[in-house]
Image 1 (cartoon, one colour):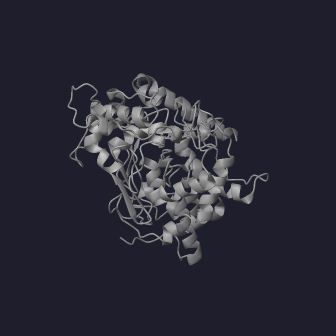
Image 2 (tube, one colour):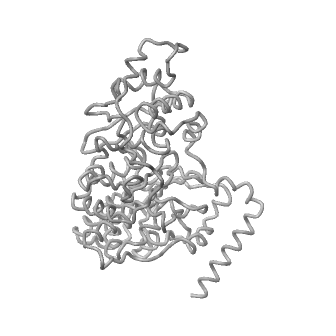
Image 3 (cartoon, helix red, strand yellow):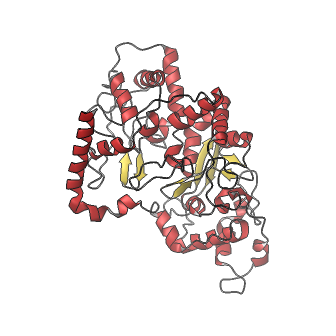
Length: 447
């Protein structure tokens, strides 16, 4: 380790420190550092995209395995246009569609940090090998020509400095829309009227975070939003799991309170998008007496609920018999996981558990869908029964869960249309790619 850096002399230490803070805000470590002891920014983290597994690259200043021979221009091109030094295109699992908004000053600081504040690791990350035609990286040139808005952030003069700061943090750095905005058939964000209105992230669903009072965060106070971003939990409303828990653990909890407040202020003034919900997700449910009423019943007895049997054996000890929770484990009612109009996050939490560390305090729930890590592995039918019990007793009783839905989320979520039509496009894939590439070349020449 310790390969030579691309820059001849280290820049000012203050610039390196500024770059470190920006890297935290941009959540670079979440993807570029493998959990449980991986070297910082050495890559190798497998990102389960709908089109196949994408491995995050080594972004340490190693010339052998990382970006040590990148110039500042090379670095900016990768961040803003998604193009590596060798000319190959990155997949938008690396959120360059958001990072393209970064200012010159901030890209300079990030470059200084990664070249002089990060230890070089001479280890190449595994190669990403998606199935054809998605493995043809040149096709991303056509995708970029259609969907990449290669422009820097411009403050809105009609908004306050705090709102503009929040917009830059949420949009350019924290790339909130990458998860919280739905995507079209070609996997691009639907930025228009659906901006921040919620989107699927594998088995999880990143909810609507617009200020609509029923569908979004309109009923959250500014203080509650800041608390959630900092800790991942607001009693009586929500707790973070999945990708959001990762974002809080690696990034958001480390931001200054004034930055978190700016993000909250920005989100609260964004255009509201109503999704049709009758009331907020956290407004559903109440304590249940079912545990007491059914205790002692056996399978097949009148009144014995199959989901209650799973709850009693695997959940009641931590979440309490009536679902009220305690200081460590959240209530199962007035909880966005059980009160939503779709059960994705409830099922995913049961399948994959919760594992985040905030302010040095671990928050853990076992993954009941993983037999390798927990003895009480639950079947698809058991998780469906448990989910329906929780929804009917503590949440939105109108939502029902089937074993097939659990099976789909256990497998990583419903594949997007682009993945489902892959077999049909294979015969014409080469022709289509050639046409797209010709289109890109012609557009570039016309500029």
